[in-house]
Length: 284
Image (cartoon, rainbow, N blue to C red; front, top):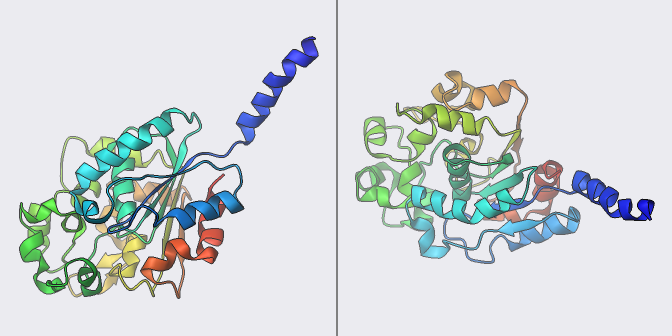
């Protein structure tokens, strides 16, 4: 009887040691309720046993809500999943969802062990192709006139619009991205950095044929200088000064970058090769 009664406990210990961490997916701007279902289905098919959550909120027009509001809203839905997973969770953010995910990683108490940023403008956005998808009446040279204002900052895109020719206005009005970068001195800088450094793995996925994220290297924390030449991640001010822990993660070997050619922006989460080669290996 003793051996029999001990079996469920032994099985439970084995199961808890082999179970995968839950995966949470946050969608991008304009995405609909079913937009990330293919990615979720691929994960459950090729990584059986994985519990996958596609957060079902703030779709369509609602995805243009201010990013701090979205960070708090998504976090409120993710928190119970975190609480139920003692070993932590894996967070995947696609496009704008990646910059929202980073806001959760830095500004909220979390147990996220792996953050996968799928074609997300982590260093900002500055491109006409992107604007035409959302605000066809604007061009990149003049968008700052609207985005860099108190009213403009009520739109999500403005929160990470990083005009290399109007940096003074960017730092004055942008109330999201420069704060995540810890480029603006505030009392919570250390908190943001400590939270970011809780990550055990940061996976950055992007490619030269994205066509929307501009420059595409923003998905790898690279960005334009004032002449619109791309400065790669390790030459960025926030990296060199380790403002939010990016350099520390890199030096610790915790960052994995994928540069994948031939993938257009809206195809990343439907591309089986990307899912198998760039995402599935990090879901243990």
